[in-house]
Amino acid sequence: MLTEETSPATPTNTDRLIDLGTSTTVRVKVASEEWEFEQIHRLNYRTFVEEIPQHQANPSGVLVDRFDRDNTYIVAVDNRQVLGMIAVRGTRPFSLDSKLTDLDSYLPPARRLCEFRLLAVDKAHRAGRLLQQLIAGVWSHCNRCDYDLAVMSGTTRQLKLYRHLGFVPFGPLVGEPHARFQPMMLTLTAALRIVRKVVPRSAAPAVHSGPLNLLAGPVAVRPEVQDALGEPADSHRSPAFALEFAAVQAMLRRLTGAPYVQLLLGSGTLANDAVAGQLWVSRSPGLILSNGEFGERLLDHAARFGMDCDVMRLPWGEPFDMVAIDHRLDAAPRPAWVWFVHLETSTGMLNDLAALKALCARRGVELCVDAISSLGNVPLDLGNVRYATAVSGKGLGAFPGIALVFHNRPIDAAGDRRLPRYLDLALSARDLGVPFTQSSNLIAALQVALQRDDWDARFSGLAARTEWLCDQLRQRGLQIVAPSAHRSPGVVTIALPAHVRSADVAAALHRDGFAVAAHSSYLLGRNWLQISLMSEPPRHELEAAISALWRASC
Image 1 (cartoon, rainbow, N blue to C red):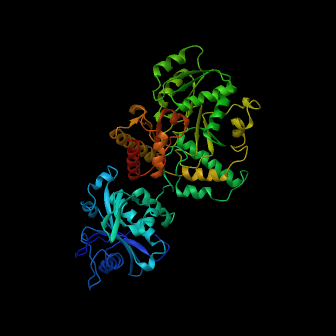
Image 2: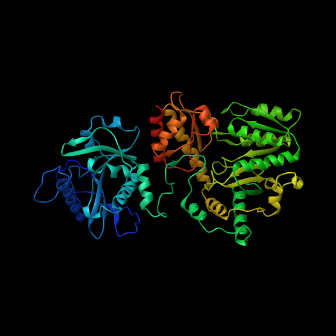
Image 3: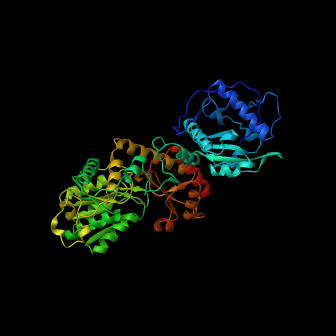
């Protein structure tokens, strides 16, 4: 329970309903009825006079909070009976301001604060999930009011329970010896975990359980995508699966403009191996461009095939020099193809696909694109690209496990028997895309993920949210690796100061409920940390993550 000084007042509140859609007859709502306020004051008396001896008894059995006019009461009601309540107040000074000197010095900066008070549940209803439902109702109210951090005074009798609900203690104990209270805080992100436990899936926010997913893969998936994965498996030779597989191919073609796409059971590494195999079979010289970790991996793919190719390697985070590339395309031996990474995930940099397409088109040079991190995150036109690779588990919002290879004309069958069977794209194309076992579950989940008509809104929203994030990071003195003119939507790589270790910062963020990338060898070696917005996290959760990052990196 929570407690603050109380005094008589006239209750005034709105009648806005918070409907949690719970399976019981209990409703959690904003108090608005006269009978609700009457019962609130009586529950207040039973809790903070009779049970926690903070106030003097009186014959009326009623205790009206001194901040009653400012309070919004979230109540759990059943058949005109108030079973529990929490008061939410956003007006400073809070009651805790008077008990704890310099309250803000204990709190993360740049937060929109409110105070939780008078948490009370009728004794007969403390054994069930009513308290979780109340927290879920408070989350809905705080989300609407743009609060993202709540403070409270928690009775020392219930600290274990508060911690279970996500509250974090801070500062010294306050109150009188007979009624001691621990200052505590609760982030909106932590409260969201309670929401997921009590709200039906169809009504729950489309956010992954556990830490907030700020990874470039695997990404958080929508509930309907999760449901599709759980459907009974189907044979990859069944007519129904053939139709579903063809539908997925058609959606991918529409999204990219590519005339053809093959779907392989595997990762992006497999997709790039398949492209390397096709380039090796062609026996033609090529040029690989590299300005980051994944450009270096293209070189490794080529080296393992013993391919005849040149390389233009730039420092990580430096944009390609189009003039130098233009000259190289005219030099002997003239490359027949160019291969590069569109969204260089390691640095958060978006390389210039349009400029490279124009350079190659003027000379009849084939362009090959690693679009593994760009598909689904930026508009993509692969219509004139010889080969492009992507995956199901990043920007498309499905599960990892499907490797995608796009191509602009049919695959030459000359690779037959020279390539391993699984890398022979001609074999896939001949067999309607399914020469070997496929996962009907992964295909079904990918199909659902692709069934969205707001791709343009996603692209523009992701770009705007990334710019906002970078601006917030810069204001806190954090260094972003990619130059602003070449920054990619969806992925932000941060060069941390030398006095902190990226792995330690990532661990601290994970404890605060945020999953970020820091443990890949190329990130560890440079003391970099990476935040991805591919899962479309809400802004208030990003603000919480930024504050946690700032605290951990100071």
